Length: 71
Image (tube, rainbow, N blue to C red; front, side, top):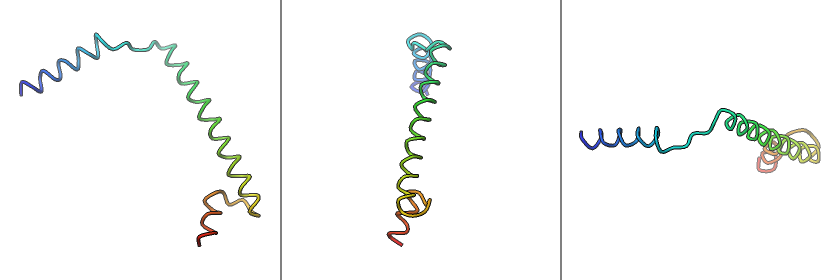
């Protein structure tokens, strides 16, 4: 039981005294960067899916084309 207690104490000490936590402004900036990157990636994937779906003759998407080929 002593090992578990020492582990919890050292983990708490490291989280409180040794970890450099970002400020709220840094968290906001990081969240905006992640949201913009996710939006750009979603648009790129949508466009790829739409282009390949239209070329196949109907809007089926990538998986629809794949399933029509193998099925």
